[in-house]
Structures are given as C-alpha cells and as structure tokens.
Image (cartoon, rainbow, N blue to C red; front, side, top):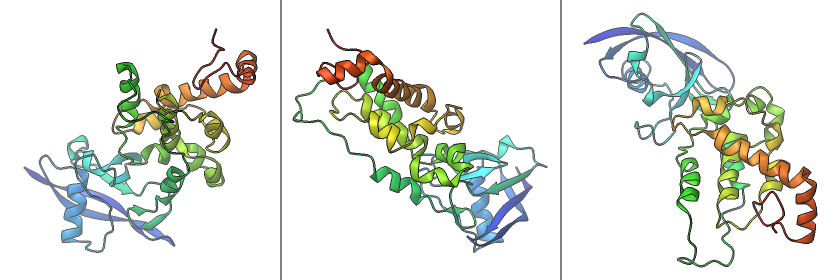
Length: 256
C-alpha cells in the first residue's frame, strides 16, 4: 500500500535557505530516510543528506523531524498521519553546510581534549572488575555519537558563546565513564568542572529524552559526576583527606 505524503524540507547553505514543499510517494514500512532518498532520486538530485548504515547505529542521519531531534533512519512514516506534513530540518546547534548536512566538527574537537584511558602500571590480564562496574560503563559505550544530546542541550543550542567552555552531555558522559572505571587511575573531576563545563549543566534531562540508545545520560552519568566533583571540591573532610593523602580516586570520604 502506498500513498503521497507532503514533505517540507530545508534547502540552503551556510548563507541562507528556506523550507520547500514536496509531494513524495511513501510505501508501507518505510522510514523518513527512505522518503528522503526517493526525493533525491525523483525531484531533488542535489539534496544534501548525511547517512551511512540505515540501521540506527552510525548516528549519521540526525535531523529535526517536525521539530523533534531524531534519526531519520529510525523514524517510521507510520508514526505520522497520511495527510500530515512532515517537516525535516538540519539539527540546529551546529552550522549548516548544505541542506540537511551540518558541521559537527565541534564534537570531535571536544573529544580530542579528553585525556585517554590511563590504567597506570597495570598490565593486560592483571586487573579484575566486578560485574557491576562492567555494566555501569557498558551503558555509556552504547553511544553512537549521533550528537542529538549535544544538539538539544540549551547551554550551547541557545548560547553559541558557551561552546569554548562546554563540551556537552556526550563528552561529559565520556568523562564520567572514565572517572567511574575502576582501572582508570586519572582523577578527571577537575577537568570536568574547569575545562569541560560540568557546572553549566542544570540537569534538565533533555539529552536523555532524545537519546536513540536510551542511555540515561543525566541520571547515570551527569548527576553522579556532579556529586563526585562537589564531594572533592566542597566537602571539608574530603579536602583534608586529600591533603593528608588518604583519599583515593573516586572516594568521597577519607578511608579509615
């Protein structure tokens, strides 16, 4: 069963653009990316769109569909009424290159600023982890780097001037993953606050709401990381313990 759907797609480049209306055939079981490809093939061969796997695992086809940041390959046309106009625009937080393709190099610059995993003197095969620790970091590794969480974070979405000082939820989550890893010997709490702007986050949970992998970014990464930073910076017992050398990485109270 097929029908004609009304699409409104943003066309333009870094200079200027506009929403253009199209009528495109839709077949049963298709997703928005299928229709965008058909639009390219039949009416707009110069339409720019970024995609790769079409399986919800590469994160390339991020866009805003009827105002909601989503993956085009995971948004089924059956979620819209047949007579509903589907509006597809580029993700808003990053500069437009052309049409639906944006420049997300900001994210890769921030990724390079995070110090790598540091196991210290532990050699391969010497370290053992509890299953609880494995599961905690495994959730964060599900990230496909679609950057939808960074796209909706109002700290940079509404305030371009914050970008130099704020890495966004995706990379604060990466710092949290390393900080919580029992084999990582680096203390990342200071860089989380001072270099990557953890204090800017006011835990609105919008990043969690748009995550296609359903990672609990706010509850399981950002809030625990905030608690660790606060414990290190403001708890007088932790401060004294750190001065005396009896507080280890990840501890919030001096050891006995």
